[in-house]
Length: 266
Image 1 (cartoon, rainbow, N blue to C red):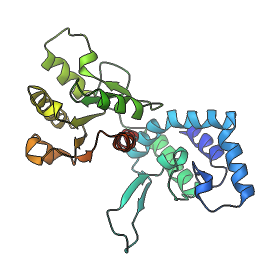
Image 2 (image 1 turned 90 degrees about the vertical axis):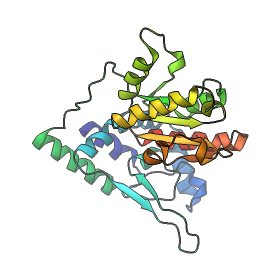
Image 3 (image 1 turned 180 degrees about the horizontal axis):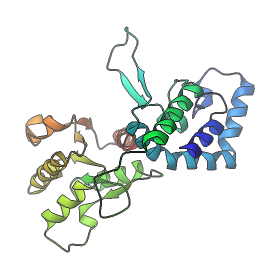
Image 4 (image 1 turned 180 degrees about the vertical axis):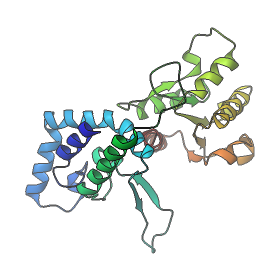
């Protein structure tokens, strides 16, 4: 955490997270030029990469110490709609918002975590996994190549692997291997399409959701807009709130962003 703090301190040269697109904000031209130079500087990009790699572990330690920094965006009353929650560390390198989270706030919670770790140490993770890498189980139909492409694009540069059951060799009954894979996954990402609600694919997805619930694994789900609620497994509405998507050019772009945001929250 100390190394992470040092890198965050260096990266937040503006005293808050630099915006990804400076020209979308109200800055003087000189300030915009300075930010653009920084964002394109090779050493700064290496610093950004290091922070991105360290962030998932840092978020986990912050949670263990009970000091998770959450930023809530409430929409204007005239606009309405639901509020959005962001983990402050996610806004350090991916600041597409207009938030200007004070550098001092981020460093304060990191310092609290460092103090907590010194006094009691991090809690041990009792969920022992048979493999080292962190991964997300993708529950889908193997016929949906677009969904597979979206998932791979969304996970680019993230410290998480993707688990596609159809890509794994069979050394045991499929139900046992899938149950083990879901048990040790960071989360289950489910995609409902015409292909995944027909034949036995729907039964496999329902099975995977059941395993995830049984082992307290988070479930994130998406469905094609035209599908009706009655076509989805009944268990789904008790464990996850699904979001609609369309397999169009614009729809897949939005879906990729949503999947990436969900993955970054793990």
